[in-house]
Image 1 (tube, rainbow, N blue to C red):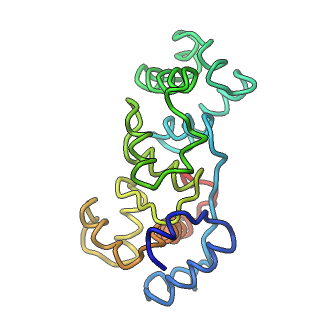
Image 2: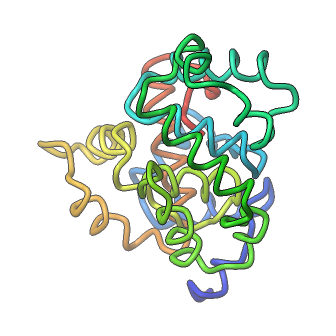
Length: 221
């Protein structure tokens, strides 16, 4: 199936299973992971402001820290909408645990949505690169953040987040590479897995977590 066609497919349990079957038939290393640990979880999140805010909180911190901060936000802002979030003062955000930078980025996101300058609900209509451009056009949302949103909230099948540290470590371990692959190397390695690279990433993350005895829910998705 051509990449342009599959790009409009939304991953669900059925398409995930089909993609895993395709990948394990194609790649012996991925097949070994699935044999050892079983198929990966789908790992999905609800599209919208709360999820994108949560992914911003996950940037460059432990997942446990981000999760704890996000829970404090949910307990403070009910429901968590851009308008209600903007009612929190800078002081209150710092009390909750926001850094100055995270406070700026999340407020900019909320303001952009509040002013209807960014339409998250329309991203599903766009091709991957256009959706990524819409997201990365906002300060504080880099390619990694956009890719994780596209993978988990929009469930795009061919997103490959080369900036993800856990993915790079997992690829090194599964592929038995001498050194951790750079983003450029990761991109090159991923070509045979098109148009299911988001599923390949899930298999690698599944290997990373399983090897360390961590629960599936611990991954950033």
